[in-house]
Image (cartoon, rainbow, N blue to C red; front, side):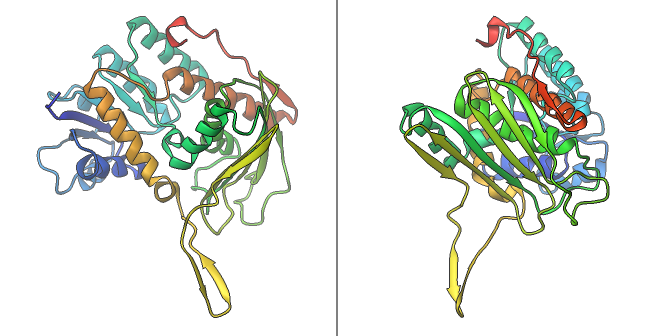
Length: 337
């Protein structure tokens, strides 16, 4: 297909604006047709310098614009379900930033709607599957290079949490990435979650349980531990170590330049996810555009989005109740097998 893919971007905040820039400058074969954001001034600022882009306050109006051949959802999670169902009704491929929907029940409704249509249209934005280090670790584990994987040790740190962040969001918003990465790396489903609560950091806002240690159990007996610390103060760090029967492998220490001078060594630490995973986002959107132009979807599915939401909800229950919470997944439709 030689025709450029017209994309409607829903949401012009930090992530949406970054995707607009990416589609305009870094991704061949696509262009932004419409942008929707309740803050029209923010939307106009995000498309400044791009000709012919229509700006809307309403997401559904942007989806319905002539020339829209695909939708990129980067709006707040409460708006995802309506936008996804509208795109499915129009037969439009979608890249939806996580979470798929605001809760597991809504995500399951999206799964059911897509399955009824009989065609995969939705890809969820779990960008770690496109990161070079994660891809290398996945290839190693799939090859059996370190034997059967027994454990994953994960680290997820942010400089500071947004003002609206809650203790539950450490799991539902942040650890959701580790949940998907674990399912993908291991090829297993998560069956139970336990949350251990250290004393809160003095840097955490009042009432925020930060950090947390989240333990995931899988259906094949692997265990995954995730340190989530969203007010560490010094940088954005994501790392994962796989421990197998015959060895281990670790990613996330980073190839950043180390400067040695005046009796000390210094290494730059990324300050947010847009910087750390810039290449992964580029690869993700390029592959999504290429697939959409060919009428296929190959990335993380709506079912993956639902499964991550269901595990996260079990994690929040474990956080609140202080015990071990089992994950109750719905039956997986044959459409996704």
